Structures are given as structure tokens and as C-alpha cells.
Length: 446
Ligand SMILES: [Fe+2]
Ligand SMILES: [Fe+2]
Ligand SMILES: [Fe+2]
Picture (cartoon, helix red, strand yellow):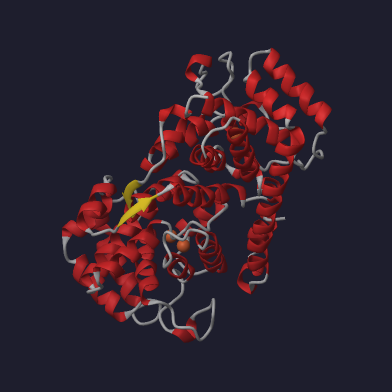
């Protein structure tokens, strides 16, 4: 058996910044209206941290947390609300709690969950609505102030023209919402025109990367797997019906690699692609993703854009370079009738074919809201048909069907584990008073 794509996952040398920046680009897709919100807040927060005299490490932590601070905003409608709100509402605290919980599975950034958790909490422990009496971490307060500055700035007017109004608004909450030292630092920064021009600068990548210092990260396949799992949860944990789909595809892809005698690392790299194949659904409105009942033609066309988004998200991560085709081509057919790239068989390597088979197999064998898991005979007949019509790879399909119980058992176990993780996540939210008050959010988890 030839090795997959002739590559090996050794170690990628990257930086904390590159990983967090790519995550922030993925979040942008949820709603284009947020318009570089994460990158702008990261820049403002980094500048504030530097001006206020925080150490390089503290500044790094603040920028990383700012780049992903709204990761808990799972419904895109909430983004609109946050972008337009001028005062603190309960949903602000809820998405901070959700974000911290999501990030806690990523060991690469150990300080980030705590910083995200309090990014809307006001200055002064006694006013901390999430945990009354607990002092809010100072670094979270930097992100908080930066977030307010960006929310106050209208995108259709030059930032410099809005300077006076923003300064007035921030100073009004000096010592109430915001730390007095941070407000002082902000006032000094605000005097410089360049600060306002920099906020508008589109090329935030360079601005951040070369003005601040970030740690190197050596990513091995296990760190990459962990990052992929986090990304898959952002999309899967939005709804109970999809809460474990990617975990199923990931497990099936890995077990196929094992059956084909690929190395353990090759199996893990296919697993990464499995976790990420549907990440492009971040770009699809949830009104379509979770619509009860039939989609109309226009909605189907939009839904079919998700592998395209998968490709563009993965393109921003250097660490996913080798597997982006496997993940993004999962709806391509060998005869060229798939979507959205219409790749033909000579362009679809073994990794792509394994992903397509894994996705179909998982979709047929997992429980769906409208039907239960299909038995062997039906799975076999549907997949055989797809091979006959030159949609799926016959050799890989036959391998899976002849090991049906084994492959299905692995899928089931992995999906059960992920459903347990989802339930734990859900319970933490349900048991939090602030989040249960925010009924709209909670209802999406059921
Ligand atoms: Fe937020
Ligand atoms: Fe925000
Ligand atoms: Fe898909």
C-alpha cells in the first residue's frame, strides 16, 4: 500500500499567534457582519496591554484570548445582537461561559479559557456577575475594554471621526466597567491618529504578528488532532442532532486506515480530516443547517457551499496543509458529479476516497432525527449502488462492508463518547443560572 500523499506528519513549527489567528478567521465566517471583530479587538487589546505596561507573556495571552474571545457565540443571530448592543445583557455573559468551556479542551492555550470567561465582567470583584465576589482577571478586563471600543466604532464612518464619542463613552465607565489603569492607557493611545488608522488597517495579520512577540509552538500530530477536535465542536455542538457527526467520521476514517495497513500517524491524520470535513458549515446560516422540514432549492445550493468553506478555512492553517483536500473533497464523486469542485477520479487520491466513504458510512449508520440507524443490508445496498455508479471507491467500500461490525462498533463507541462530552458541556451550561435565563441559547442544545 503506498503511503498517503507520500507525506509524514513529523512536527510543524508554528506559533501561538498563527493558530489563534486561523481560529479567528474561522469564527469570522459565522457572520460576515462581525467584520474582522476578533482581529480588531486583538489589535486594540495588544496595544492597550503594551501601553499599560503588561509583560510580553501577559500581552501575548491577552492577544490570543482576544482573537477568539467570542468563540462561544454559537448562534449567528447572537453576533448581530452583540455587535449592536451598547449595554451588557445576559447573553453576553452566557457566551463567555460557553466559550471558556469550549476552549478548555485545547491544552495548547491553558490560560485562554479563564480570560474568555470574564471578558464581559466589569472591573471590581463584587460586580462580577458570573461569580459574585471573585476578582475578575485584569487581563480579561483589557479584552473587555478593547471589545467595547470596537463595538462602538461604526464601520461606515472613519474611526478618527468617532474618536471623541468613543473616548467619552469609555471614560464614562472609568472605574465602573473598566480598570482605571486601562482607561488611562486607552486615553494615551487615543491621542495618536495612527492608533485609529491601525484599527482600520485590513492587514491585521502583519500588524499583530510583527508588533508583538509570540511563542513558538511545535505541533505534533496529537496537538493537531486536539486543535481539529476543538474546531469540530464549534460546529457540531451547536445542535444535538449533529453533536457527534464529525467524531463518527473521524473514527471511521482512522479505522479504514488501520484496515489498509497505513501507519498510526497516517491514521491520525485521516482522523484530523474527519473532524474537520464539515467545519465549513460555520459559513452556513443555522436557519438552514437546523431547519425542520424540507429545504428549498436556494437553501440546498447554499448548504452545498460548506465544503468550499471547509477548504478556505483550512487554507489559513499551515498545520492542516496536507489534509485540506481530504477534508474539503468529501462530497466529490469519482465520476465528477460531486460538489462543489467537480473533481474527477484522477484528482481524488486515497485520502479523499477514504473521507467520502467514511462520511457516507457514518451518515447511514448514525441515528438521525428523522430515522434510526440503518441495518447492514440497507447500508450495503446503498453503498453498492454508489460504487456501481462510480461515485464511491469500490475497494474501500468493500473493505468497510466486509468489516461492517468492527467499523460500525468503532463508530458507535466514538460517537457515544462524543455525545457524553456534549452532554457534559450542555450540563455545565444548563446548571449555570445566567445561561438558563438566556433561553434562546439553551433551546438550541436540545
Ligand atoms: Fe463577547
Ligand atoms: Fe466581542
Ligand atoms: Fe459535508
